Length: 426
Image (cartoon, rainbow, N blue to C red; front, side):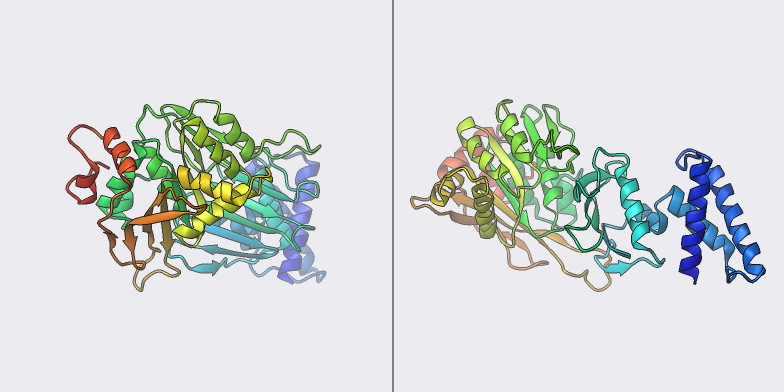
């Protein structure tokens, strides 16, 4: 009965607001007046026996106002800084808090309410969610989160994920403080970023790939030109030399699309020292093979369960370009162009007594060019399991790679001192 009363009161209030041409975002007081009046009228009719009276009219007024002016039942959870990700499936809303636990919101919602929340989040963007564009990705909440939303007929109901950007301005030292890696490993990654060597960052969702990429970008010398391409922008590291580029979906008439592959192709002609791709998922990977000929390095992330899987994943993504290039050739190009793979992982649940998940570097692997059409690699740092030490294996990158790194380091500093923990330049 309460749900029916809410629907009726909300619809009546919205009709009045629209008829009076009230802007809910600019005149909250007027909205509160209208909603209060509608609830009072509902209660009067209830006392005459037309319907069941509300147990708490004040609570109903607040709920309807939040729905019209704010984000309805999602208002509180969207405002919480400890919430990492929010999931909307039809009328059901759940979220992951800072402890990594999946929880349901306490207030009831409807499919229509949640669709309205999604539309309101999109209102400040150039993206639309409708039958012509049933899939959308956009930066929302003042660029503090990324939303992916799908509606029928692609999904059987509204399905959306709102992911907060976490630790996006991290540095390598701060990741050391969080236990993600050792000072020696951080120093090694810092040394890599002084060069034009290419790095692939891998891991499952939520492992901290974007945070590590941000930290590594922060470590790049200010004289390096960084061109950063993303489907939906998540990286916000200040860049002295270079810029950010964001893909654009097609307009309602199907025109004007600029894909991630288009962006990578464009920035190759803009003399970058390093191309950064926030997340490689498709044909844009093929354009990275051209970076070899352009003489620039790249850094990107890819979803994978291990460092070797990451190499296979980027090859498969490049083959999606359909450029009539065989898999052995793509493998050969990447085996000579990817210098290092950094793999991360995270706890499935927080430790007892802890309120946060551990996100840690599990392996830093040097890719060695192979004679055959496959990858050959040597582990530089290895962690046996989450929570165990991240140990240097005692190995160095190839002679050529070590020489490149040493030439890029400040006078008096070399890679051996960094790996042995005798220097901490990061």
